[in-house]
Length: 555
Image (cartoon, rainbow, N blue to C red):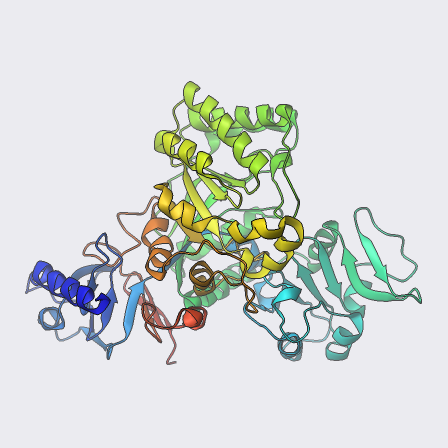
């Protein structure tokens, strides 16, 4: 039945688009003989499309699109391959991550502890003696199916005797070898720094583990500043890796440690024509006191979104409004005080008065309820319905929250932290984890929403891991962690067309339709028909952004 329906949709598309562009208009590029999953409002499937001057000029049957070829037209014969819109990550921290991208090893999706060590060893071999090699999050001990554990100083020393090596585990632990411990000023006799527990064995020797959030700050402080030219080069490297994963646009949410140079590197890349991923960002600060709130309110009018272009632009403010209310997923509950919520509300009023979009981190019940109450009060003073204010995460959202959000026209961004945090979530939240986040509830609620990662420290970056988790409910390593799953079609919509709205780019991005930018992926297998377990393994063979091939898997 599904095959019949899709055949009818193809036929309808062909009839509708057979004269989609003037015959005399020669396309720059045509993609023929494929399965074009447009993700338009009808989820239409076509055979071919044509591109001219960055944008799609026609979508339809191969026979009709061939008429748009000219002498200089590039012809891509898809040979039945599936094409989908470029994937948009609605919530990431890529700009901050780019700073040390040249030093990073990524363990995204690696399910073997041994393989993880081999990858680190490979990076060490490619580095000069003394250069740092780091894994700045994006992995968990629970994802390793052979040995679900961290890393000892002894085994890291064995693969890196001459390089400092350190692995960040979320925001609560660092594993380091001897050279890294020495660089951080940690010796067996060193007293525990504030907020850090130096782990030792029963003989008083360092194990290499540093427990506590400040350990991450200590590590990053020792990595040093990156020169401006290197920061731009790293931004380009990161964008290339994102293109390889299938990401063509993202919204960055700043985060602790974000610096002006992180954003400036992408601005320079844009100005010099080196962008391969559309990079949007929200303004980020961490006010922590009433004085900080007053200061920020006094400067609020200086935040001016939408002064950029379709490659690089400021979209609003977020993801933290008043930092003491930034809740943590791996704690039992959030209990925001009335005084803190009042400061949160004051900032919200200032944003609303200045017409600024807000993205706010909220995971647990106390935060969600408290922020909704504040938003309702703000809306009475200054309406927010047209600002696309958005909750990020919503791990413990309930039906009444979603009803309140609909009345305020507040949106939702949902993220794939359970792909690696699911095992830890069970230790804190028990069986509630199976409904964290309540994907099916949100999908059926009518609240506008989209899928993202929250990469790079607390999740893998690949959107195919995110969609695989949303469809199967599994974390990397195979453990079932979510029962509120959605269909693969719903997941694809949530990672494309739905996410364009958060970028204020729905007229340009998110589906393959005439007039929109030619941001698309040619896949190595059919997303719509492969076994659900294989979704995480899908790879782009080609990534196109604005009609330009920015990744070619055949090269």
